[in-house]
Image 1 (cartoon, helix red, strand yellow):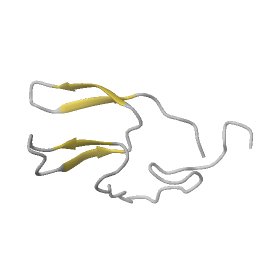
Image 2 (cartoon, rainbow, N blue to C red):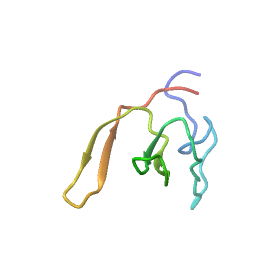
Image 3 (cartoon, rainbow, N blue to C red):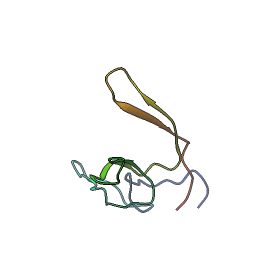
Amino acid sequence: MPFPYLTATGPYKPFGIPAEKGEKIKGKLWCKTGLWRFKPDGSDVELLAWGLRNPYELEFNEDGELYASDNCMKEQG
C-alpha cells in the first residue's frame, strides 16, 4: 500500500485494528517500555505509563506531577 495508509488503527493495537468506543486498554506489568515508580529498595513497583517509545525530558511540576515527552512515533505495521 502506498503511504498514507487508508485504514483505522486504535492506540496500542495491531495495524488495521480499530479501537471501540469506550474501550480501555489495560497495561501489563513488566512491559517493554514504561514509566515506573518504586521505593529505593525495589519494593512497591507501580506502572505509571506504558507504550512510550523513547521518553525523555522528565520533569516534575510544583505539585509533584511528573511529565515526560515521547520522542516521536515510528511508522510500522
